[in-house]
Image (cartoon, rainbow, N blue to C red; front, top):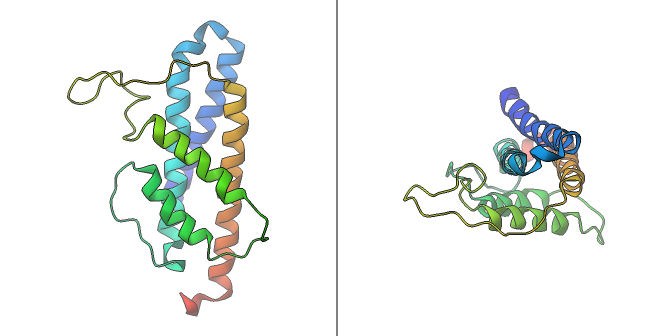
Length: 165
């Protein structure tokens, strides 16, 4: 299981490192944006798969389809997170959900940041807008912190009442 954690952290760290490189070498920014977004998308996907794999029993969900559907994964994570206590006015889940939706809408099949065409050779369209990479880095650091914090909280829940699950 530790390999999964290394993969998750590795993709998140790679996204941040590539942004640091794009800042140092702005002429490489356009070529680096795709691997940056892919790394963060995959880091997000693996964080959700880690959460479902370890804590799915809290909400009677499991990691069944090994696809790249971020929304399906998020719905399962949401059910898990709902089992944990949190303040009534906490909107953290809504914020993380918006980020998951944004990545899903950009790249539903985990192909758009890796290839210019789909398997049937159709051009994969992406929005033609500027991307603030420093903002992406800050947001994804927050998302990564959220999943690490959730991992600790959910682990404590299971440790406190293992007989319930």
